Image 1 (tube, rainbow, N blue to C red):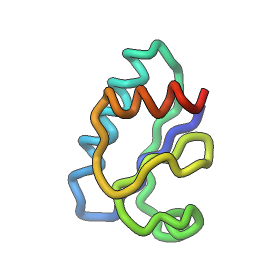
Image 2 (image 1 turned 180 degrees about the vertical axis):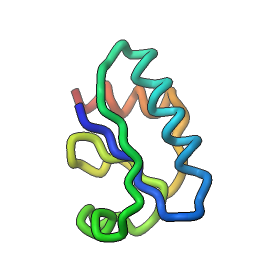
Image 3 (image 1 turned 90 degrees about the vertical axis):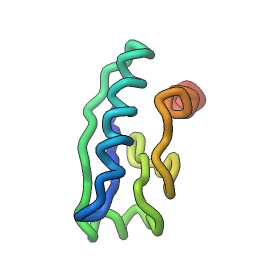
Image 4 (image 1 turned 120 degrees about the horizontal axis):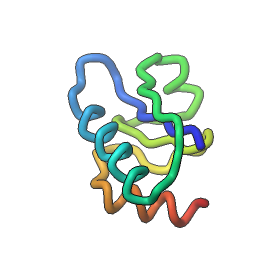
Length: 80
């Protein structure tokens, strides 16, 4: 499972989302590679207009606010 946290430079919100993603993976017992993406070309490729955003295996799961670990767990469970 590849998870990307998309954020633009200068924002601190991804750190919250990034930490929440790690916490959610641990709670679910899942393994996954989590990377922070702040390259504008990659962000445009995904069509993300509002950051932060959560991308799982190349699919935009959510954009526009930081999710709690519980919300991330629900998204992951729905899409496994």
